[in-house]
Every structure is written in structure tokens, then in C-alpha cells.
Length: 220
Ligand code: 2DT
Image (cartoon, rainbow, N blue to C red; front, side, top):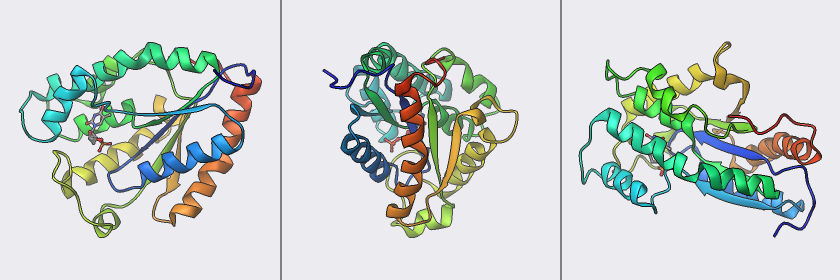
């Protein structure tokens, strides 16, 4: 059980392209939060451990094929099956650091250029999920991503797809978009240490405000 009485925990999401350093930054952020005395739990989407997650894993590993809409809804369902748990942990005072969320959901599906699958359509099934207090977006150009060791074998790890994903992520951050209110861009081309320092400067403030009760309610 959490050791420190707080208004609630914070919900922090880390987003970005493949190879942008999400795993490293989630780890460093959790370490910083923990060392600073916060109660913290890390999660990731897709969560490949549940039955729905196993179906997603099969698709990403190219073992099964699926209609673009069907796989999109499974990614969303994979978040919905965890939504109550997220709310519960936050109300208990745990800060949740989450590797990918519905921002990835929207942009990866919309990047497929399926004329029947717009960004608007992709947004819909996630409406009502817990809204993050802050989204860290790790921005990296596709060339630098490739210099970092190339892509793996999974479904979306192709340069052209990554370019479109990046453009769509940046589009979410443009003025007027609902998502832009929560998202903050960090240059992932910098050293892991510098990126982590910049993220900590921002997130330590957000978590402090949330715990003190001076942030908005956990919305949806
Ligand atoms: P990881 O490499 O981080 O395990 O991601 N994706 C992810 C989607 O297409 N939709 C989603 O809703 C989410 C959360 C991004 C595996 C891949 O799954 C993609 C990369």
C-alpha cells in the first residue's frame, strides 16, 4: 500500500516512434519518481499478456492477419480491460507511467492509409478512457531511428510507416486538436541522460500538483 497520503496519483503516458527510447525513458522516469518518494507503477500497451493481448501479439508478429478495423478495436479493448485497474491505482495514490496509449492507437491505424479508417474513426473507441495528466512525446526523425539499429521484424517497423506515424503524432500536437492540450514534445535525438533530465523537470511538477490536489480531476 502507498506510504504517503496524496490527493491521487498521476497518470503519465510516454509516446513516440519505435527506437525513440521509450523503454529507457519510462525506466528512468520511474526511478526518478521512486527516488523522490512517490508510489509508482509502470504499465505498457499493448499488454500482450491478456487473451486480447495475445491476439494482438500474433498480429504484430505476422502470425495472423486481421482487418484494419478489427485489430484497431482489439488495441482499444486491450486498454478498456485495464481502465478500471488504472483508475483504482491512481485513486490509491499510485502514479502510473504508461508506455504507449490511445495516441499510438490512433496514429498507427490512421497511418495505414486505409480510406475507410480515418483519424476520426480511430479516435472513437477510446473515448471515455482515463485521460492522462501529461503525455511525453519523444520526437525522432525516421533517419535517426534507422541509424539507431534499424527496425525489427514486427508489422509496423518499416520506414514509410514510421514517417506517416511521426507526421500524424505531430498533427495531434497542432493547435485545436483535443490531444494537443495534454502532449508535450521532447527531442529524443539528444542523449538519453539529457532527455531524461528534461522529462523529469516537467513531470516532477505535474506529479507534485496532482498529489497536492491542485491539478484537474482525472478526466476521460
Ligand atoms: P511496442 O513495440 O511498444 O510493443 O508496440 N500499436 C500500439 C498500435 O498500432 N495501436 C495501439 O493502440 C498501440 C498501443 C505500435 C507494438 C506496436 O503496436 C502499435 C507498435
